[in-house]
Length: 179
Ligand SMILES: [Mg+2]
Image 1 (cartoon, rainbow, N blue to C red):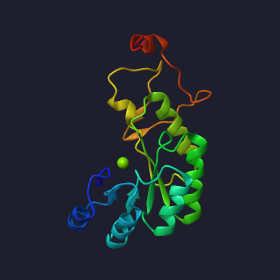
Image 2: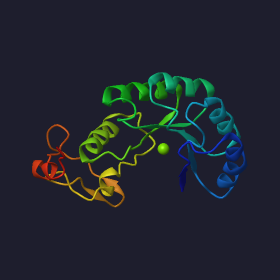
Image 3: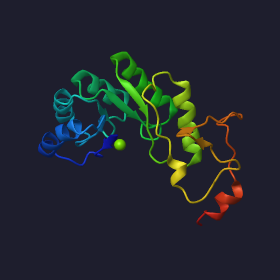
C-alpha cells in the first residue's frame, strides 16, 4: 500500500505519523508536506526507511535538480500535464536519471486523450521506471473515444493505431460542449 498525503501535513504532523505508517507496512509515502518546503521533505526522507515520492515539489527540470541535490525524495511523480507537456516531462526525467532517482508515470486525472499521451510517454521513456497510475478515464462517466482505452488485469494496454492510437468520438464531445 502507498499513501499520498497530497502536501497536506505540516512538519510536526509528518514527523509524528509517517514513522507509524512505515511501521504499519506502508511501502511508499507521496508528498507528505507542502511542495515548496524541500528542506522538510529532505528531513523526512532521511528519517524514513521507505521511499518518499515528490509530486507537488516537482514541476520543472530545476525542481528535479533541487530535489536531487537535497536528497528530498527517492522517486519523482512525473505528470505530463503538470510538467508542461511531453518534451518538458522528458527533461524532468533526464535530470532524475542523471541523479539516480526513479520516476513514476503519475496522473492528473486526464481524460482519454491526455491519458493516451501519458501512456505513450511512459512506454517510450526508459526513465519512467517506477510504474504508472494512468487511471483517469476510469473515473469519467462518459466515453469520449470511438474505441475506449483497454484496461485489464490492473494494466492499461498501449493503443497501436497511428499518432496517440486513439480516435475522438466527436458526437460525444459535442454532447458535452457548452456554448
Ligand atoms: Mg500526488
